[in-house]
Image 1 (tube, rainbow, N blue to C red):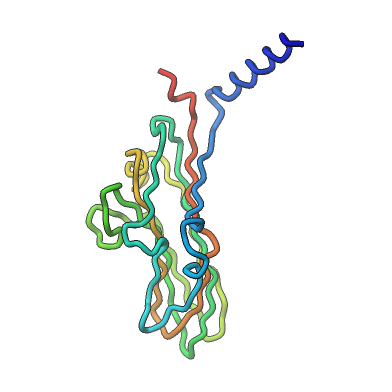
Image 2 (image 1 turned 90 degrees about the horizontal axis):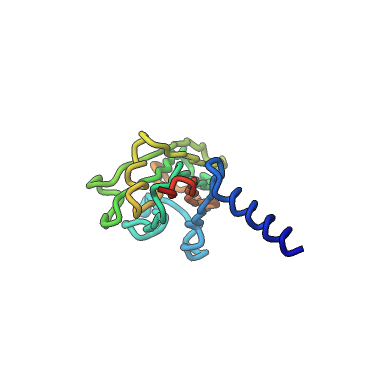
Length: 181
């Protein structure tokens, strides 16, 4: 009985270290946001909102970067034009080095993805970004550095739009076999 358990444990350990096994590290950025800051209204006085609210973004540490396969960023916002004129909205994801204090100033940080939508008065819509960075893509080197900052910004050009951020997450995939020298 003990031998069977030992062999089973050994087989499981070998499968976990296989060259084909990929492990995922998921960071839910919404969990860092207070519930009341996940929704609100964009208007002429407040034309943009950042997730997280700090312009430095959220710092993400990456253990074992040598094993990194890719990085996936997903952000989604539900929108409703509550104004009397059409509104154009844009959603962007930005990355910067760990030391960056403002992801939105263009100094060392980069926009890795963006999407726009136009809503007529009373119309509802969804802005959704789903980006996977692999070796050679802009921003991959920032993730591969071991520590980076990530943030998203929703901007309005129009009168008034209600928003609710429903998803903001980072998923890092690793092949731990690559850590074996």
